[in-house]
Image (tube, rainbow, N blue to C red):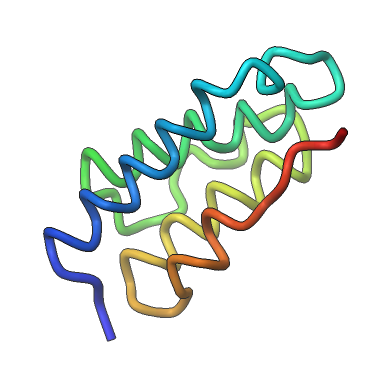
Length: 88
């Protein structure tokens, strides 16, 4: 089931919170950060295709971006998309 506008906004807020975490700036988390920055763009612009994701630099960042598209299509739950943890 596709998410509602309010669910999408809540997801955007959760991703913003992840990116505001100081740990997001650690070198070990750059792939996660890159993926979530792309995920935000996907959600904000309602991009429902995988176009452009291949330009990301790591498998992990591409995977997060794919999850964002899948979320918009109703094929992925919010908890899966926002559940990618930073490496500690």
